[in-house]
Length: 323
Image 1 (spheres, rainbow, N blue to C red):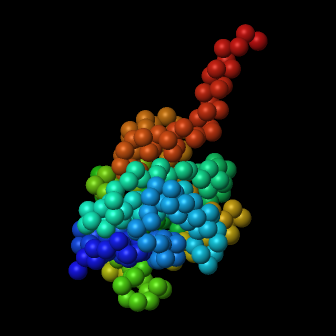
Image 2 (image 1 turned 90 degrees about the vertical axis):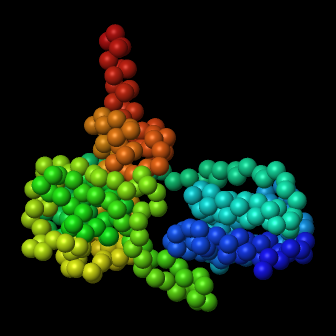
Image 3 (image 1 turned 30 degrees about the vertical axis):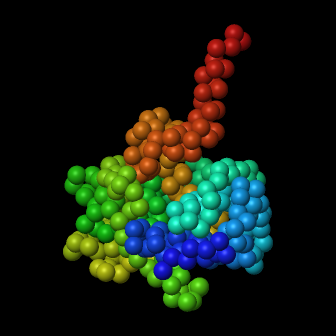
């Protein structure tokens, strides 16, 4: 039952919005929103009445959340986290207006926290060579997964969910049609309760076919199981998956044994995109291979920030000098 009163707290309003959202979004999306609300929004909004909300108050809340982050950690939040929190808060206020709990007002623009913006982290060519040498020397389905991500740009959830019936070595491509992730079960009354789920990728563009190079096909042919069907690529077993958390730990161990910096697995995807830019693959093709929702995301993230590409272009300019 909707609680229509100006004594409604902002945290209660957001909980109502989340409850109404539950049946219209994927479980993983609802879990993410709930997690961010419980850990980042609720501590700052559970004593705020919607009756005092205006543009200045909301801006003050956003500033507090951005600077304070998670209350028990007291660390500033990243730009990506703040964008999600901003969306949840703005959606809750719109919902409050729709049920008559508050008056509509111009919502403040989210001010970017430049200090929290992080540069893309990827493997430099020498680092990538060292990593690939290690993979081939310690070859297994688990180590080959790193190679697959380096040369297809798969996200860790897509790789962990990958089964052999998605890989067509004869035609030379793999299909991305599912992902695996561990989500928080906020409704269980235990903030630490989690569950592993396998689902379709979040967007239609994320469902894609990725061509495989001849070199990668030759390597993968060393792994093909007798019974392909839905045998998992990483575990080589049917119905048994290697979840992302486990694979991240494996990746961390590999980096340690290679003497490489401890960076996240997502750096493999960034490396793939960066190499694509460096060899001149057009941005629209790169965007499709990565499963991005639009080309601008690819352009801004990889093309505009690629130092190697910028260096090559500056060399071309330097060749015009009359010396």
